[in-house]
Figure 1 (cartoon, rainbow, N blue to C red):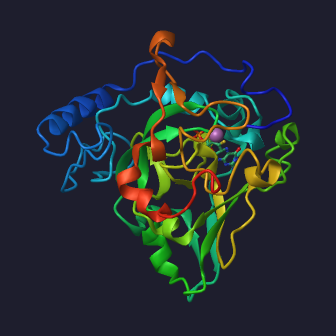
Figure 2: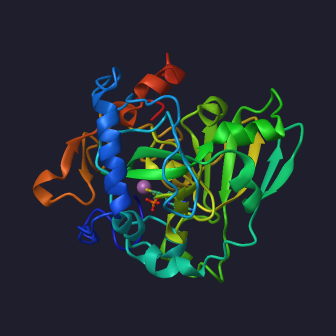
Length: 328
Ligand SMILES: Nc1nc2c(c(=O)[nH]1)N[C@H]1C(S)=C(S)[C@@H](COP(=O)(O)O)O[C@H]1N2
Ligand SMILES: [Mo]
């Protein structure tokens, strides 16, 4: 992405770790591989659509009790916990990929309130511990594609954001949702390393926010979110580039106009509001046709990027009639 120093595209990559995920995840993976092999839907799109229904209980090996979501992406190797937590973008804690792991320990994740306001019938402020109890927590593995053309496969924990939206009853005038990340210049003292206007802000159109794939994310690998991944709560929108997924959210506001968003403000010609993953629309400074899979050996890293990150069956209809070159 566009930053002052150093450019993430000119070699600040840290070597990806080869550390093996915990044994339980290997077990889960082989369980899933079996389930997929016997599933009639296994070949849908070749990539995703491998839905396993109904949700089944999985072993509570971590701190959070989760159920397997029918909306999980299967058949792809999970990125290791080590890579997911040591190769991050969280510019409040520094612009290098290894900075958040080092610095985000400073983030105070309790107490934590999320204020929901704007065009809703019942504005509410939720305590994070109530959000954790609001709905059964699901293990939802999604492919994650950063606009910088790298990707991971991450076993997130959470539930559909629509479940939270229902709690506040949006008015019909609510057309967009705006997310605001936590910002404290004294705590996140690395903020001057980029030219971002803090706090970090992101937004979705109402139908995108309501789409069942949009995940209110409270954990990963069956545990609470590590600070560097946006503790204690973030949003994950798996068919969009990673920067749409605001971390450490403190504010959710329902509005009638498309909200200003951080990267769009920084460089509108490079980062659109929609930012749907699209191999046919290149970033002005690099191709989006392929991506580097973090954690794979260098000779196996490149893979083709899929339109909507492979989630087209679930989301493409929201963009019917829209020119995706214009609304990038
Ligand atoms: N508050 C905040 N949210 C953020 C960012 C950030 O710098 N600050 N970076 C974004 C970008 S560019 C990406 S790719 C993802 C990275 O999430 P991860 O580190 O958990 O992989 O978070 C997004 N959300
Ligand atoms: Mo990103």
